[in-house]
Length: 114
Image 1 (cartoon, helix red, strand yellow):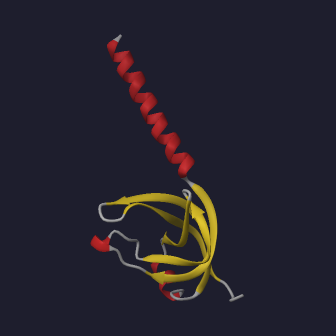
Image 2 (cartoon, one colour):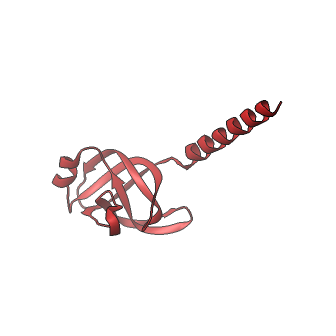
Image 3 (cartoon, rainbow, N blue to C red):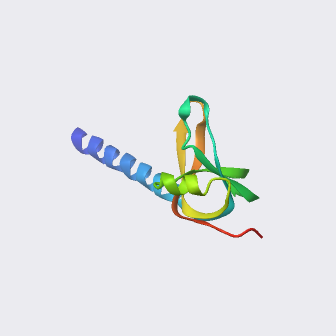
């Protein structure tokens, strides 16, 4: 009986963790200038988009969002250019930077200025 309770508790805990992770992942599209960034202790992806207009993430207004993209050469080509990025919003935790939103980019392209 005790093993059944422990197993049930473990399964429910894992389910809740997965459910929370799933609800946090939101797909968004942003437009702004792609720039290099750095953080204390190297806790950064190295890139962020300075947004043209503020957006609200987790109830906070943000002017920029850190981005993670698998094609480093494309990021370097688009540095300091106006881009449109679509991706999944996730959260990363660092010792110095705490919990922060990161856009895991699935699509990135240069756009013309307004």
